[in-house]
Image (cartoon, rainbow, N blue to C red; front, top):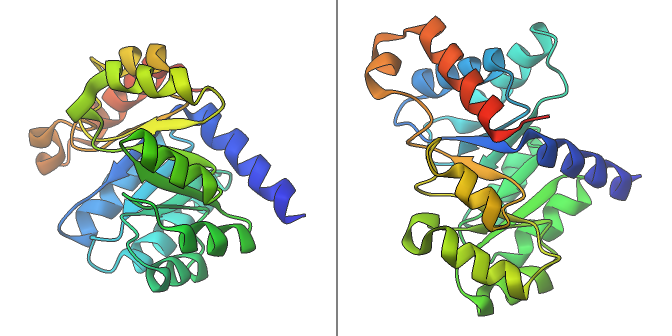
Length: 219
């Protein structure tokens, strides 16, 4: 049953194509950004551990998804650096966990709970370690350091690995990352126009993100 749930969640995340990576200094902005993502049609949302009160934000996003008829949305927690953070995130209801590096304990805990585990890597050696740890997805971070060419080189060696480049991905360059072999992409700082976000221009933000999802080929 657990393996089936993990497969279902990976199928849903892969169809999402784009994962908003929400990293904000206050919980209110993070929750607002997540609400925009829900309204725009995102099927997966990552909240970073660095958000103050991230677990309460996670619960609030889950409640909003239920109320808006989006109970199928996957909500995960990223920037996980140790097993205790992973455990707390899973207890709060995270569907997937993301670490910027290779943290085998994260995968073990996630899989035991039927959640997905995404480990970060940049070099071939790190990709091998992430695969050995059982990662469902390997996060290439920071993606901008090597760009699509770096991802394409990794994909040529690790053809059966699902990659998610994150860090510097934008609407303008995400097509290049998909062409290089990305299964999904993580988009953080380039997700929203900063001025519109500060002004809480909801309609414009929803429209822009919906357009980005369409350009990503979200299913």
